[in-house]
Image (cartoon, rainbow, N blue to C red; front, top):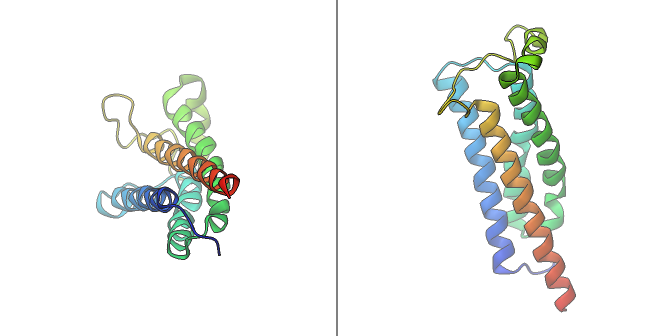
Length: 147
């Protein structure tokens, strides 16, 4: 186990906090507000929820290599969230949202400021996690090259 820089430790913690906030937000919307998730929402949850465990363990063990699956999951999550957001907002794709299952994927429960929906929030969370993880990898590479 190699020693992490303070910046790398902070990045791991920040990524964990972001993933935890996303998890808490999705549970708030479904369990407190009573919004039933559609199939694309479930896929985003399947991609987001393990990130809390992955980055939490990586932060506790101070091991960046443990968090690599998080980069992959967040990368896939960005694309799923983007597609889901486009299904909600683009008229050309809204018809595809009806075929999503019991709950149509083009259903918009929230629409803050006319553009912030639940898939938008999930997409921002995935993007933040992905970018912070890239910064974490850069920090880890810089530390290795200094040795």
